[in-house]
Length: 593
Image (tube, rainbow, N blue to C red; front, side, top):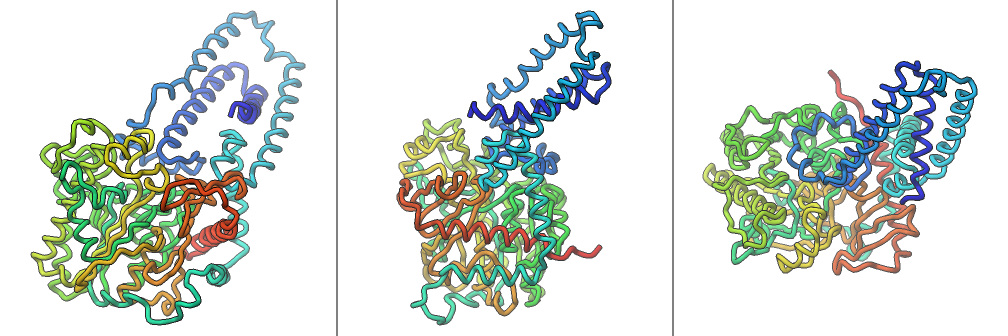
């Protein structure tokens, strides 16, 4: 958008004028060099960020810089040579600075009073115009469109103003009032048909008193399920679980800035990520209403297992906030050097079953969360762990490496099932498995390439965000495909239902719904897609500046939907619901020391 470069030009001019007016003459050169270098680095990093997240970063992303070394491999794969053009102006500046220094001191403009007045005037005019841009663009909900209209620097200012405005609104409210408003708003959406009545809840208490294991599968999309490659079943274990249990093929990610950790947060709280900060970092100091807290009332002990260091994504804060009794991180496992994170999924499950079997022997019911890492980008599965043979056309490709990693993740889950059977726990355990987020980036494997290589219909938005959800209930004799559209917020209400926990009786505020007992569903997404995006029974809707210039795509055909007028109420509803979710989580009490 070349016509919008003026917005960044004005913001930069404000900063340069301040440097010219405030910084002593001898220091101006180094300071200008420093500003140029920092700004170039910001643009370079933000371009990488956008390539991965599909979102323009704000100042809040700086809080997660310490996480970057942990995902070095994923980041490096996104760098393109043209990104380094951001630094070419440093060479131009060096030449100009050299020319300026060669002039006699008497000719340098920096010492003339008239020059100073001109700089001050330019700075004031630029500041006023930038403020005008921010005022007009600040009302745009879609962050990408807002950034396009404001430019990178003014977008940061708008983000600060928006955050402060929202915090002021939340401060004026209270938790009880917010919960009441949530309940009132949710009653306006017809999640249940009037004709369906108030009969018994389906599957309520189907796994009451049983152990609960939830597996969060790293970068696991739904399309590999029930797919074969040269006669090789890609996910035989999950296919079998789907055939014997509940399978939700129309299930989608909703994560925010915290990625994997946000998926953990949502599945355990049914609260929207704010999208401005990883929830573990921003709200790890709260007492979060959660699945571990709900099950604690039924004498359950909750543990979480992950092969990485617990400090990654500030899980050391989040796990106590969620009320997990134990966490088992990197030191708990034997490092078999599977990938950059260390231990393999097989080792994760070996240690997990070892710890859980001790509780089982004590007749202590447990809830265990496993967060896998073996299918993490860049999908480098060691040769001796690869279990499928790729066709020549997929050798050395992102798609081929991804399918190899997914196949291993599936195999490792099979080892968990076998260990549970060997230790007499399988028949007493409900097993839930879901993907945390997509794995394949469009720039590394296009929808055309995926579709042609695998013989499937793949869409960069719908298929990309489509993740699996499977639930195995002990004693269930036959499987069921649940077509209801759902998102990660719906995991807690659905699981609570099968565990025999009534959220209504517990007074639990959930922003998702029990997928086994709703006739319609709607849920928002505001990371990887802009604020105002939502899924309902029919479409994925993505706004433009607002609703009217938004686009919708059919979840069934992947074709554009031209008449979007009937979805306006859904758009307004989701915006209100997400704002209430933000208010709710920010008003939750902080934990004691």
